Image (cartoon, rainbow, N blue to C red):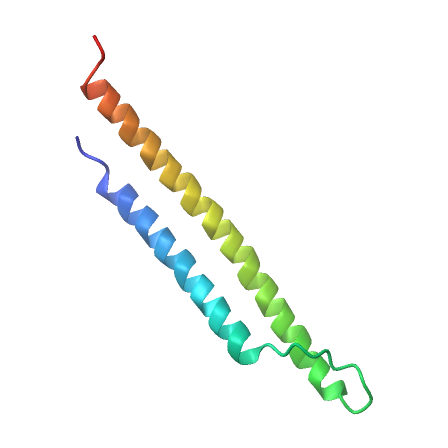
Amino acid sequence: MSINVLAVTLWAALGIATLALAVYRRFLSVHSENDVLHLGAGEEAEIPGQILLANKMDSIDRWGKMLTILTIVVGLALAAGYLYQVIMENPIR
């Protein structure tokens, strides 16, 4: 019973990358995000920073969703391959 070590390594790397991106997003939102929308007079200087942060968070969210889906798909494919391999090695008689 030999699972392809490269595939398992890829799956683990995807999981670690997804987790690292989530931690980075959390770090960025805690230390940078301001819950106050600056639209009043004299606060115009804050708007470009808010737009930049919103765009960065959107990009991180998009990559996070893609990595999460990819990690799940690869994990399910590994599980299916493992089950197939076990069934082929031990046929029911």
